[in-house]
Image (cartoon, rainbow, N blue to C red):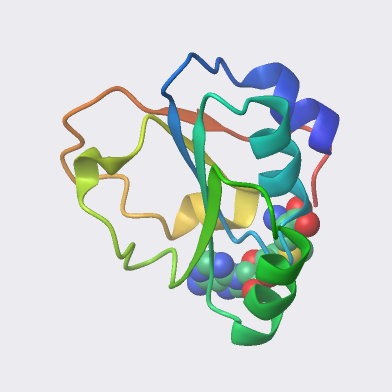
Length: 112
Ligand SMILES: C[S@@+](CC[C@H](N)C(=O)[O-])C[C@H]1O[C@@H](n2cnc3c(N)ncnc32)[C@H](O)[C@@H]1O
């Protein structure tokens, strides 16, 4: 699944990326380490997962995690260039909100 994510995302220097439903953060970590010139955020509602995600991401300067729900993203619409999420979240992300910058919605083909 991680290979699909990375191969489908066009990342440029300065890209700000949000992974929705990051869990313990393996995808967010891989992306942040792949492109240290980008900023990566991981969002998940589970404080348990986020505690582990933050521990495993210690030392990765361009990665941070926030607690939140895909249905009510706790960010301004213009914050991100790229959203990464698995198919279930496509039904609950607030995609009808006005996003001032282009956003790539990347859905891996081989995810659950
Ligand atoms: C199957 S895990 C995937 C974790 C990670 N993306 C990965 O590839 O390892 C799904 C994650 O979605 C999170 N989740 C469930 N409901 C959510 C919601 N409403 N908004 C955001 N994340 C949610 C769960 O807490 C869980 O960590």
